[in-house]
Length: 269
Image (tube, rainbow, N blue to C red; front, side, top):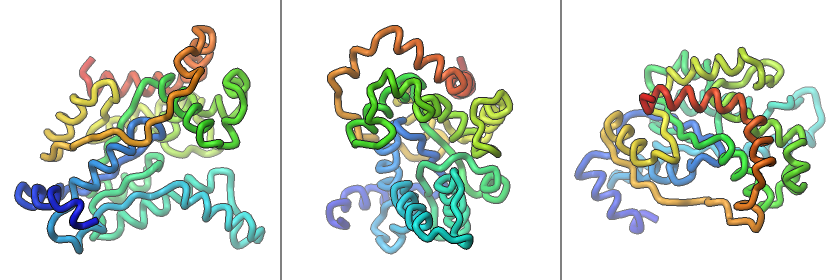
């Protein structure tokens, strides 16, 4: 692994690797896997013992931990409906407390606690895409990976509670966890809009070159972004009817409010 990454390490060592502490808030199906790989590479240098400066908090591992706790069925390990999100936030706080950690990435909603305590040490950024495109991509990704909540046809998925919840992912991730997991209220949307002001950079998949330029201007490093974890093409993916698309747009109404607010701020629209 060291020798495979040697050209990147030499380049970074000569030009100075990324030094600022960063939190990449990775929203599902927003091109984040390519970004996190580029981030990890940006911290590599010939000083291999510093490789643990980059940490990716995997939700799949956390979900396995939750399943273990559920099996315990004891008061000491009682789990809540948002247990995974709670754990990711707690792990975020833990890793931000470690001085050796310079970069953290993961499917972790914005944490007000983390911002209050580490906002001066970690700069936060994220990447967004059109909410309907994100919703569709996540549905087909989950279906192709045989996820339980996406085994149903899209017309049933649209009407399901899980499918509707996918229309407020920007409210959840940018607004942060709210009591009762209510991410459709006007208060939750307003909180997400206010939190946008706390991000150092917000990029957009349809303006990726602009994001790379903004990241370079802010952090002094030009990310080399490839393509990874692309949702496989599906026979029905490119033929979603206008009627279905309008239904998805309605489901994503709250996310569009947050998305458009971010575009106005970071694209100067």
